[in-house]
Each structure stands twice: as C-alpha cells, then as structure tokens.
Image: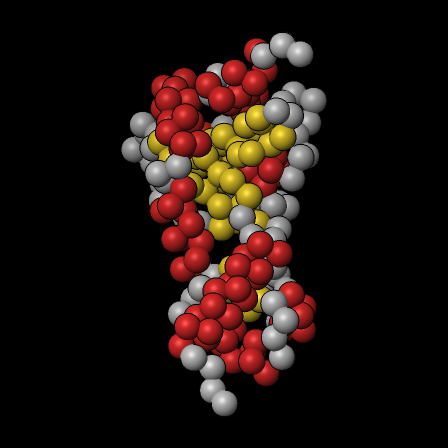
Length: 221
C-alpha cells in the first residue's frame, strides 16, 4: 500500500525539521527521530537533497541545505530582532565606515547572517546575508558559541575568507546570547588599535539594542 500524498508531505516535513533542528544527522538517526524505516527516510532525504533543502556534509550526514538557509534568512529579515538591530547596524557603519552584520545560530555547528548595513568605503564587504558559516573559525560563530573574551568581543583574521578580518560582539537577552553584531573588513585596512576601536564600538552598540537594554535595566524582583 502506497502512502497518500498528504502523509508523504508530512513525513518529508518531519525529516526536514529534525535535520534543521538537530543536524548534521546520520540516516539512521534521522529515521529514528521521526519513526521511519531507513529506506523510507533515505527516499525522502534524497528528494529534499535534490531540491537543496538539505545537503550531505563530508562525513555523509545530513544538514540544512542552501535553499533552507536562504528561506530562513528571508523570513528572519522580517523578524523583530532585525528591526530592533537595524539602528545599531547603521550606527556601527557610521562609527567605523565598515560593513556590519547581524547573525544568528543556524543548523548544527553553524551561524547564518540575516542582515547587513553596507560600509561606506568603495572597497567593502557585501552580500553575505543568507550565508552559512561555521561556528568555529569565525568571529560571529565564536560569539554565538559563547566564546567571547574579557574585552566583550572576538577578533578573527583570515577565518572564513582570506585577507578578511572579522570582529564580533554578542547580543544577549536575559543572559542568553541570541545573535552577534559584527564588522567584516579587508585585513589591509586594519591595525591592532583599529581592531580594538571597532570592537569597542560593537560592544557599545550591541548593548544599545532596545530589547537588550530593557532586560539589563530591569532590576525588579
């Protein structure tokens, strides 16, 4: 007996959700999580992979694909977090001249950029909205992984891209890091003092976001 179209869609969406929430996952783990046989899960995963909703990573496990990430980024672009952070993004550009980004944690050990305010230099960093980056080896990722240092920001040189320096600070609500505010700049335009200046600007602006300020300023019990 074949599955009805509705049941097939339901199973595919369940698989997609578990891969996005908990991935990367092996075939066995994904099938077990949604109570499917391995053969049925494999068939559905291959269909989702063909449409780029999921992808295979190097070790064969399944993770969120480019199409899923882009859809998520577009949805988040209308979210209140982006609206709240937009003034801070623009002020970072005003203070530094460099492109500033807002990023949130993505599927598995990744982060995804969801908003940008472009810098004012003729040579500037652009077009990373919707891009997925690793948590490890990137400034925004380190912040989202809770690895911010005592200065309140993280600096990574030549992490995701060669000849690029990234500086990031956390946006925290109620003590929980929910996003990162970062600057991405060509390395030739940075010095140690300049990087520290950018870091301090990011820390100040990340703490100026209304939702963050409201929580930090609430001393009621």
